[in-house]
Amino acid sequence: MDTYQFGNMITLLRKEKGLTGERFAELVGVSPQAVSKWENGRSLPETAVLPRLAEVLGVSIDSLLVPKKLIILNTVYSDGEQHFNVTQYVSNQVQGNRLSIMVNPRFLGVALDSERISVLTVKYRTPNGTFFTFAVQDELLTIDVTDKAYTAGSTLEIIGAYYGNRHEYRSALEKMRHYDYFQWREIPVNHETFPSSPAADAPEYLTLVYLNAKGIQVISCAENETLCCSADRTELHLKDTSTCTLPGIVALQWEAGMDSTWAGAMYAALRYLGEPYTYEQIMGMSGACYRIAFTEVWDWSAADALVAFDYASVLSSATGYELI
Image 1 (cartoon, rainbow, N blue to C red):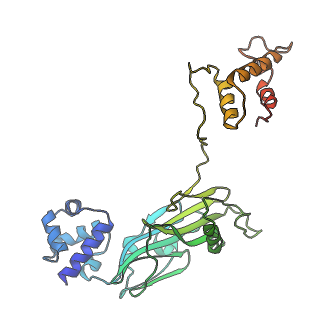
Image 2 (cartoon, rainbow, N blue to C red):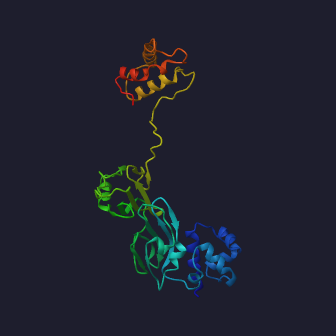
Image 3 (cartoon, one colour):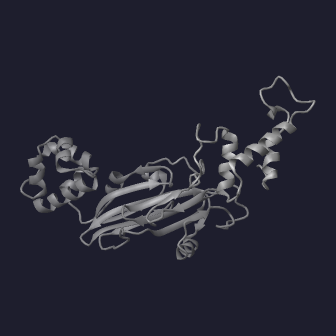
């Protein structure tokens, strides 16, 4: 065994796991000095250490004993929502510095209980450098030691786009390239934006495979959701519709001149819309609407007149808006 080649492989795999030399030594159960000697090619680990060494690095013992030119660094099977690391299994499939595997749950031994499109992403290293590639469900993924696939960059690059579900889908890469040309920020995912078969009754998804500085990523957006691109165009994420924040809204608090929080909220909303109403005007109109509610059918035992009359709608109408 070439001690220097072995040392380089150990260093590469350790860094890929994000481990310092000290933490790696602790997990393997040896001294940092021993790790340093391995990585510098001055010695080899004892046979008894190999099982734990392989376990920590996520590779097989055979791949340690017979270093290969094609090294699988990281492999993830994902539907854009669930992510399963299958690096060790895929690494064991490398034969003669070549990988050839079918992308499906049965072959990979992973069950994705999902209607989304599944993708296998691979980060690998050859003497030519570090590269990334991928394949969609039921495709054959092959990597040869001479292959030069995708490389990571500082900006976002979409390399795969699919619209549909695991039963039926089509490429949407040209559509995404169109949006990229116009520096998109948000994309509504629906049948209008991504036309699909009229016979498609099941929910559909937009699944994107992209590269950024962190490597290869997969994201899936369900129909009627919105996909967003970060301001620096390096990340993709789903739009959070659970809350809505409006910048510059007047803060509401007690003892700040607006003790009626309902009228204060109305004033803040109108002010945000550029309407010239004052808080005092809103209070006056609110009082007038309240008095309208004093009718013979008002429930006199109630604490306020809302049980008899919706004066909020009247007040909104008085300012030129419809309350929804």
